[in-house]
Length: 208
Length: 208
Figure: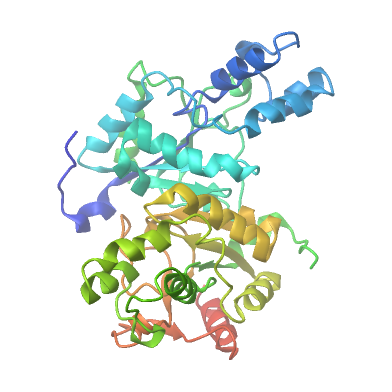
């Protein structure tokens, strides 16, 4: 894919789109379940459609106290983040979004507190799946409210931080654990495959 | 040091200060020179006060073409970022700044493109030198204009990105390679030890 050539100083009129990684670009839940079942085939597990907490460890802890450490072991292991598969349609949507004349697209992700492998692997994942130039569009921060942008596509039900309200509006990317919550006026994006993301982007373009 | 307890919803009235890492919090230049001289004792080197390019590799390449790879070897090595010493007074200033009632302080750093060790080591450096809670205040991005804030203390002469102008005003932290440039109306901070940073912070507080 060729890089867009456009005058840099026109950028401020462009729609600035922030896209989360885990469970928006990368199949975090599917990756976890498959590694967990592989490593602990005799332990109970939570099927994807029954996941009901944002943090996966919370629900495994509730299921059985000693599963907390087992769930953490999966998340903290070398290769966990790097091995995640892309969410269906995410790469194509991101590339198309980025190719639009009037957008700026950044990936905005919160690293795991156990960052030993996570931060490197997030960079490597982006390079491997999206291309080296996307390293320049990757923002790692625990506080996403500190990032500028017009919209943030993110599965997390509640995003808080130092800036309230943040510059962006959240578009809630659907995941099992956020389906039942009140989206409180936020638009939802259910997937990257039905083309609905284009309508949302066009709608936001009218607002800036 | 005890963590400040203050109501979260008062945060938006606080001065949001972004502080760069390399050559502002960490002694990047000193660390480079010491590792370079240790590894290549017979090669020519550039004394700190003669450094005149923002990117260190550029000046070594100019000095002698084949020194480019040697300079890169130092920067890309495991342990380079982790081994950097704090800039004198930086830690105390950062802690005092953070303890103020009306500030929010974040570290805002651009990772090296050769990120294999750099991104992990930046997180580890922050944890080791400032404490685990500062991981929550660390923002990694190649494009600092995408970060919200009132001021950015940074040694880089020219900071460009998708947002022009950015939300913050830069305070130019003095370094050998930026001493001779026109600061173009930006305030300068020469060091963390003479207390001048407090005046700059107070001055910015009046503007928000």
